Image (cartoon, helix red, strand yellow):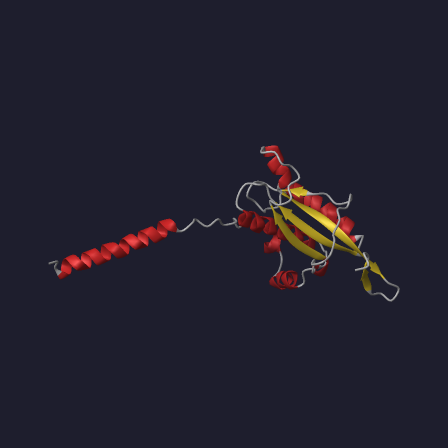
Length: 190
């Protein structure tokens, strides 16, 4: 016969063993790193407006424009570089002079990492670009953000040069017609 003490130790060892097994069985979560952004320069009211007044991009076709440059990101980052900010500033000048265009920022990643991780990182990248455009004066309701993660690469090789080309945000546009009554209509007739 076992003593009560022996039974207690056996029970506690079983519980500890199950707890250790549970900790080891859990997959390590991948987390997109928080990076400093231009949101620090914006007041809370502007940030709330940016979140609630995003362009509805569903069912709309956006196209590349030769007047808008693509920006690129460092590995595992959604932080805008100084070069990227200069490019986005030039893009914003063009977009300000074309108020009948709706804007989509498309975030992309290289093929390393999981699908979920890259979708989240691509969204952070596209949101950072959207936020910067708004910071530069574009209206929040004109700009939407979307992530493709690693699903639409421009280069398929496994090299740093190729991965760099895939870590990008493309700015695309959709022109809407302004009728003589002042209302906006879809230029594609949808």
